[in-house]
Length: 209
Image 1 (cartoon, one colour):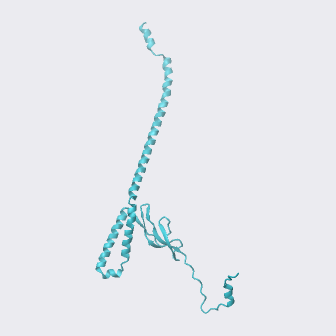
Image 2 (cartoon, helix red, strand yellow):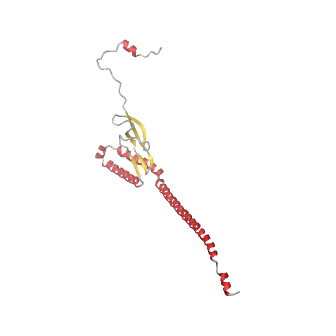
Image 3 (cartoon, one colour):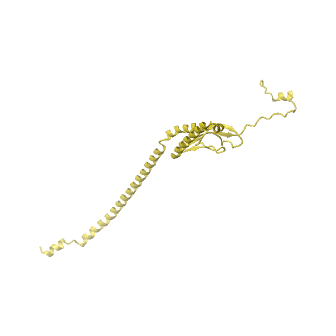
């Protein structure tokens, strides 16, 4: 076999090249679609991990913020007692007794320090003003107050202030609710005509009927 014959056998035919070319073209779109699908799955996984991280951080923040809510509720009674002690001292006695005045000053400083700690942990008072609309989320109705100064259903008096810690309610404010006064029964005018026996009989209920 001559060298020219070997070269002709080794050289690929044009028909063979054209036959293989469509196969390469058909494989290329498949590879690109797979790459796009992998990229989409990767982006979706990253988004899910980011959402998980944010939710976990939010839950940790809520746990940290409200972990002391039970302890804070117990401290509310301390704040109430300090306020009651200050309000029970007559102002006249403070002017006459230096020892009592110094004692009250110390209690006031203790109350201010406690309230500053409350503010540090976002514990704030709920102290509605008279006439303010009643809130089922923040107020607890204890009694009704007959008054014409406020519309019925509004807050008329504050029996005990409430507290909240951030968005969480620690204790609702205990309030009295306004209601319309009951009109007094009409009294007969002095010196008016006396009621006759017939009129009295007409108003009497017949229980024998």
